Length: 367
Ligand code: NAD
Ligand code: ZN
Image (tube, rainbow, N blue to C red; front, side, top):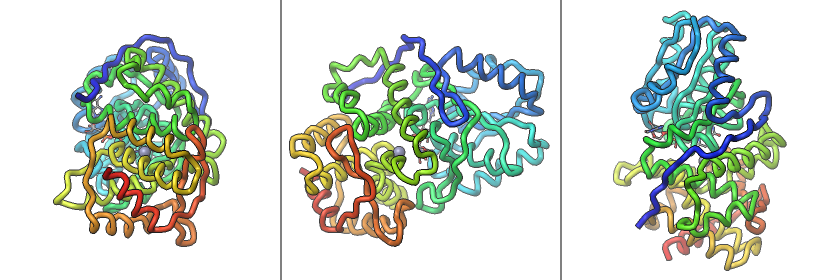
C-alpha cells in the first residue's frame, strides 16, 4: 500500500532570505503580502490561477488581501500542456485590456505551471512588473516557486523559453496541500528527495522508511528543502556552476517527461514521476563511474521505487529518449552534461556520459 501523506501546520517557521526577496511562512507571509501591497500602492492586483487553484485556493486567499486597489483574476486551464506562449499571449492581452501598468502586481497562485508561466508573463510584460509567488503544490513550494527561474515549454521541449527573474516575495502556506491529490504530493516528494541526495545525507536518510517519517511535521520538511535549494541558488543564481546540481535526475528525467508528454500511446507522467526515474538512472550511472557504491545505489533505487510506480520502457522508447537528450538546455557544445552523485549528499557537475551507460541504466531500472 502506498503511503498516505497528511499535513499539519505545527511549527512557526523563520523567514528564509533569498536573492532580493524572502520566503515567508503562513500568517507571517500574508502579513508581509499586505505590507508590500500597501507600501507599493499597486494600481491593480492581478491574481493568476489555473482552473483548479481558482476553485480550491483562491477562496482562501481573497479574504486575506487588504487593499483598496482593484483585484482582477486571470484564469487559464490547468495542466503542463498549457504552459505555452499561447497562454502567455492571452494573459498579456487581458493585462493590456485591463490597463495593467508598471505599477501593477501579479500574484501567482498555483503549482509550478502557474508560478513558471505567471513569473514569465510578469517578467516580460512592459519589460517586467512585480510578482509574488504563492505556491499551492508541494513541488512548487520546495522547488518551482524558489530561485527565480520562470518560463514556458516550446512544443515538447520543456522550459525551452524563459528568463531568470526573482519574485518580490514567496509565501509558503502548507494548508493549501489539504486538497492536493496524493499523486501530486508524490511528485513534489521527488524534488525533496533530490535535495537530500545532492546536498544532505541526513535529510535523505529520513525518507528511507516512510512509515517512520513524521508527516505531521511536514512544514519542517518543506522548510529544510527550501533551505537547501536556496543555499545552492544563492551561490550561483545564473547557473554557471553549482546550481547545475539541482538538475540531478533532470537530464534523463526531462527527456522522459517530454517523450511521454508527446506520445499519445503513453500515459503522461507528472514532472516528479519523471524526475524520480531520472534520479534512479543517473544514480546508476554514478555507480558505474565509481562515484557511489552499489549499496548506495540500491538504497536510492529501492527508496524511490517504494514511492513511485514502475514505468515500462521498450527499446524504441529508450532510443527516442536518447534523441530528445540532444535538445536538453544543459548541453554545451553538443556534449550532454550530467550531474552525478559523488556519494549521497554530494554531487559532481559537468560529467560526460556515453550512450551505452545510459542504455544500461534503463536496463537496470527494469530489474
Ligand atoms: P501543476 O502546476 O500542473 O500542478 C499540478 C496539479 O495540481 C494541477 O492540476 C493544478 O491545477 C493542481 N493544483 C495546484 N494546487 C492545488 C491544490 N492546492 N489543490 C488541488 N489541486 C491543486 O504542476 P506542479 O507539479 O506544481 O509543477 C510542475 C511544473 O513546475 C513543471 O512545469 C516544471 O517544469 C516546473 N518546475 C519549475 C521549476 C523552477 O525552478 N522554475 C522547478 C521545478 C519544476
Ligand atoms: Zn524538477
